[in-house]
Image (cartoon, rainbow, N blue to C red; front, top):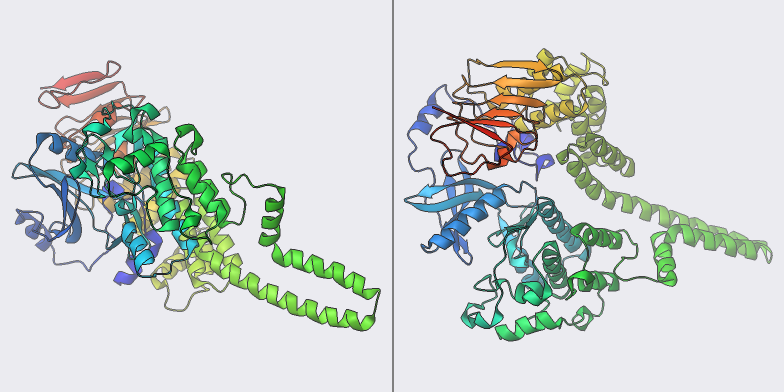
Length: 635
């Protein structure tokens, strides 16, 4: 099995299973050697070189000797109990935001009493570096491409807002651009959960020496030039989602002008410009900028919160309007502007209609003129046809991104719809046919997958093509594989991410709870807990709900596979389960986590249906549980 087949771009940005998906699979080593190797690892992370620093953190590149992957390691620059709490809070809050455009946190711990956390190492540059190259080195980046980057930033912030988290330090320097199209929002050190008590704001007590175009770790917290007025003066209200929208407007302004909305060598002057809304019109820096995007940026940068976009979704929608050739809501376009954009979007059709009218007039004058006009019409038609083909080719990458977003959201019908549209737009695109085949494979539509793969070169997707042909002979496309055949298929597939999506489709579409349960157990036993040889657990289905007892499974560490089942009662006492993410969607009424490896049960007790939790008498002594949850402490 080649590494190229396994680490495909199809899974770029896929949300990690239990925060850890490894895209590289190697040949199986001799039995027992890897376990012996792990047992001799004392210091998990090797010393690495510094790759960056922030207000309170040092970031270094290091190797995780357990997984043999390069990661970024964050540590405190200096010892300070206040900074330590903020540091741990940042790690936990960032880890809770699982999104393709938010930096994933892998590990949090203490080393020699000092906290650290590790996260994905994104090879590439900051958005501020890209803007600097465009400004100083004349680098040419199409505006449409910059807007695609901006949309991904909006996606990350919109997701955080849906979790009631605001970033409060959005700026180009905190946006990481990977070498393969990744756009990652980093540095959530100032982020807060909406509803937390805010710091008092006092600009007069701010130390001017802190102003260095980096995050201010003083009374005013944020980055000059991208701070919203309410981050400078409490007269403008409290900090909320609209604060991040202002900063997004600042990032958009920088992409258009290559400079921050407010900029001055003197800190106090910069903050006064923010409060006064003293922001130069982008046309002063580039007279060719689209008025639509200027209107969007200036609306997001409104001094008064009520004048900004009400949500990131509205801001994102206006950017998409511009990309699609429509008027934005921010510019409040009149009738003539709307008509002009309509003609611009459909210039081929309008040109043809105009020519037909002209041809009708010419017919009344002279046949010779008519023939000449007909020849011109044919030339125009051929030209427009060629342009339409080119436009279809350019549309395919955008449609494939929508396919990926569909299966990330477990909307497999939407993913297939966009994949079908991509091959219709450009039947010559092997990328589109490959994507369509893989979506059919996830849906167990093996015959349709084989048909899609047949449009590829002989060597492309060879392994997936063989699997589709083999299992297409065993069932119709509107049926599911039996549990035994699905188990055999997943073992042959040997790909954890494909397996996860295939089982996710079953969980979405099958009305048979027992079948979904058996498929989930196959995923648990054969994919994510393969180290367990002997399984000893109990389960029972009652009134449409499932009850599990895994308390005899000391080596069980992952519940992935049953996370979407209607589990009402769960016993994971004495197990190695440490993550809570797999239980948060369950309609739990009772859970036993005594002597498990779960460090923080607070996400669990937030489950609305939870009535009872069992813990060991020595666990969570300082934690306050809500009155609605009965706490049973076991000796």
